[in-house]
Amino acid sequence: MNCIAHRGFAGVDAENTLPAIVGAAERADGVEVDLRRCGSGEIVVHHDETVDRTTNGSGPLSAYSAGELADLFVEGTDAGVPTFARVVEAVPATTTLHVELKETGIWPDARAVLAAADAAPSVVVSSFAGGQLRAVEGYPTALLVTEAPGAIRRARDLGCAGIHPSIETCSSTLVTAAHEADLTVNAWTVTEPAETARLRELGVDGVITDFPACCPGAVADRAVGGPQ
Image (cartoon, rainbow, N blue to C red; front, top):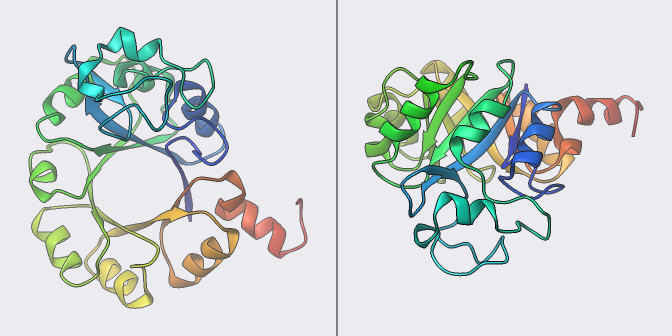
């Protein structure tokens, strides 16, 4: 059962920043980040449409250049909003990079970043939007879902390798059906060790979590009285 660091373990580090991503790559099997296009055209790693929630700036992300975003302070740290190119360079080949497409039309430029990298990590591309996933070639894709009805069929029709359900959506019925359809199941967003334990019993392949303490290995250690 894999551990995927949601936005670079957003519960303990400044989300989607380079230090968080690098640190998470040392502790997790995979790191999940969000992709958007900034005002100067580059693909950057940031979740929201605006910079208000996580930085000392304000307004839409699209109003900022990549350089201006790098100079912002994310969640009170001295880390700014990184470009996707910098993240790709920083993530080791042994770590799977899960990239969520937050906007339409950005995949070709994201793919170009990966193609230009000297040693890009393994990448899984996810999205709630089927149209975005349909445009992805050469990389495994995963459909993000918050409702179970029709989810397996949609993922199969889109040629996905996996399905990423919310933890509320994740059930034994969904997991069994996904595995019968040869789909990998990674559930999000795990914030409590008990959720990891429940998902392990359901047979999910990975947890997308904000906290290192919710990684399957850490939860297993606690269950057998190991390191706390």
